[in-house]
Image (cartoon, rainbow, N blue to C red; front, side, top):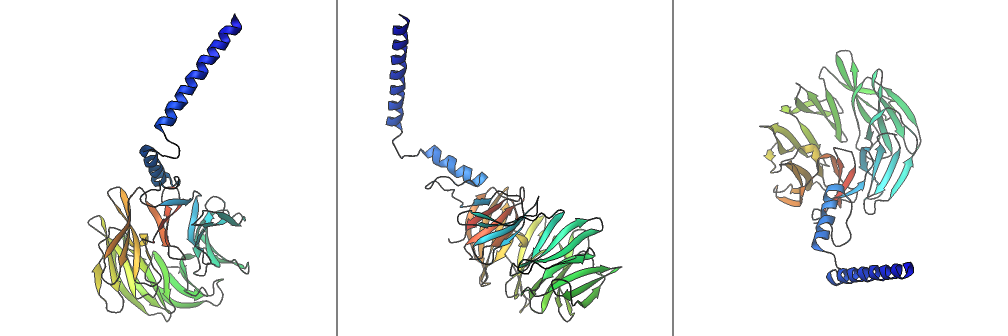
Length: 357
């Protein structure tokens, strides 16, 4: 009797399961994705960077290429990829933007590494390390493996455009000496002695650098500095000043806070003219195309971001992506000029958005 009961129960369960499967297949045809599923895929892509199945890509096109806690990401000069240090270990990785394949370039641990300045040819670096005496600058050449310690009395540094020299702002008592030297610190030549403080340096053309000096807790003044020591003031006492030079150094994109909002402007170094750019972005969240005819910015407003291309000729705008839930720390255009690469301010993950539109 028990065997017959068990058999009857098994038949009932099998029939119920068959009815359920039949109903499911009738209401969900094979190969068809529901609208709710597509929407969920798009949302996953926007907020997590996980690529949804093909056919349900996020409308903004922004996708995550690395979840690593990155430090000082930059273009890989030989391919359309990104080089970056691992913040916790000092390891170096290269990742492809197209397929997110990662390659470990160096597994040498670098304790106390807090920042990296890459040379334009991406073959040399100045590493910044925390130390008891302050920030220690060290030079390393990835081709020759040459290293050199440059000291902890350096306030700022920049590579020359051809990567053959560095400019160093070295603190000497109440003064700061601006020195041009080989990347390993040899053959130093002082081009300026100044009492300007809170300095940052960039080197935009063979014989022209720029020097930004703090004049208060929030405002800075920008100068150009020739390799002959000629110092010329360009912008005076600008709150929250950020800058981005065009590739040929004839145009200066800069931003300053106006009524608690970033005001983005472009300055023509030849004519001296200055125009407002209609994008709510800071200059450090913009990147120039190599031809200097346009640049791309990440604009942040009302808790969302957008990616906007600006033509220099008429300052016309084209929105490439909108309504992004993203706050960038750094942005740059990829080596092949087909992606905008962004690092996330919150977790230093690396993202990309296509520029082919």
